[in-house]
Length: 215
Image 1 (cartoon, rainbow, N blue to C red):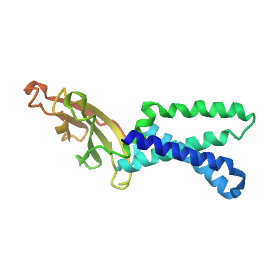
Image 2 (image 1 turned 30 degrees about the horizontal axis):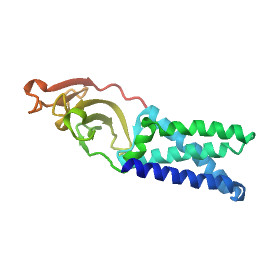
Image 3 (image 1 turned 45 degrees about the vertical axis):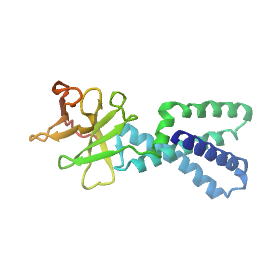
Image 4 (image 1 turned 90 degrees about the vertical axis):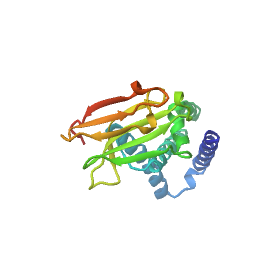
């Protein structure tokens, strides 16, 4: 259901943007400049966050900002079709928009309508662990992602991803996975307990060093 809703909403927004393109010259100049500036700045900020691995503590905000990024990109591509020769710029715009329907780019748009369950724990002074579920629920095709973040107390609305491990339900009890920071405050012990279904030998653990934080 989420895929159909997402596709319909994206198609509707694209239709609205096409109307904006048609009546572009009737829009006040200051508003046009503001719209273009926002459409350029939003994807730029998103890419910077992606490269530096900074995000917000809220998945709703993250996926909402991803929506803004995709809509801004479509808006710029539609405006691009105003350039001449228009038959050529239209073809180029369509070719550049179509990849948005690929799984890797489209599915994050769907997630905003079904945010996965997330459990967050502060395991150190500025270190936070987050366990999020993925998959349809069957152990063999589902699991969790256990990710460690740097979340400074002076910047509570932002966090930086340090590292993470994906656990599968077919490996261990992925839904009980957790992390513990070691006494030296330099390493994190990632633990996935044994699954009752798989036996005691299915337990997994890994010690991961906390690398120097780079901003």
